[in-house]
Length: 402
Image 1 (tube, one colour):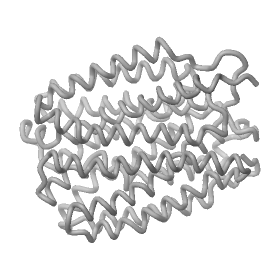
Image 2 (image 1 turned 180 degrees about the vertical axis):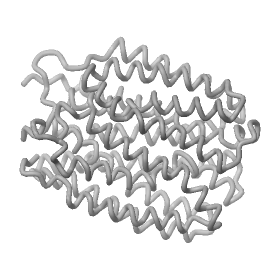
Image 3 (image 1 turned 90 degrees about the horizontal axis):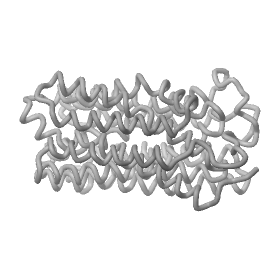
Image 4 (image 1 turned 90 degrees about the vertical axis):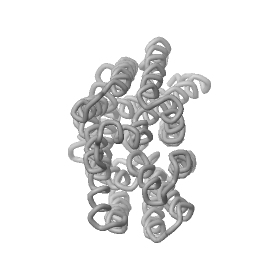
């Protein structure tokens, strides 16, 4: 089998990481601008939860079709089209003057962003051999965490300096540039002999509908996102309200768990690949994920008990580190067992993650308002994280080994 050169493989990985960075910057910009948008358009916190949720509904609905599209027509056209479309909608966000318009634009924005990560996963599966995918998938999610960290801080500063509408227009321009470059530069498969898109076991020929892992992987991804998605939505507004912080200070604190999450994805990706290379196969995927869920379950109650922003962020960052340890194994396992259906299976998993994000977006403000604190919500997240660990223990037990 002819492999593309290491420099070409690194270039592909770098491009999909930059995609993840841009994707999440655009996504969290609404959180960074939430206070200013709410004040200008007169949107309550409960209603803004549905603004967050509108994105997630659209994101969920088109996730599997977008993954199928990446499998069918390739990641080159799929990703270029997705980024161009959501960049237009990012620009339109800066032109809304009513709540219904904002809800509609964010819903359509979610539809267009749905193909980003399944398409990126398909690109990695097409270009990288199985023993390198763990780190590549980890770096993909590292890009998303760095994008969120930059977005929460950078867009917060931009909103104060230039205005929230102008900030969205600038983000839209960056997306158009990325889409044009990707379509010009990238090719769906490397030249020469086609790389295998599945683990050497031949698991791609298995009927995914009959594999328990095809259901367990999406469930555990749902569980992880109920904890993590707060970073994209309510963490920054919560810090501003609960600890009476300025926009800049809250943005600084809110970025910390995301930088920690980026580190977790790099660590997890390296562990996955190293364990695989020494023959640990299935456990190279299972062990980092189980440990991550256990760590998050232990850290969340400590975060809830903190009365100062520094202490809260410290333990919430540890919880974020834990749930983000699960991401590289999750996406790598999709490539392992998905084969020629990697985009579709990745889309199904990410779809359930977006359902977790919807639960987070809508349920957090409801429970916080009803109870006056975060204990109830964090208790739910702890239970789901423990269930996620059990799901990984049961996953990847099919007869064919990695």
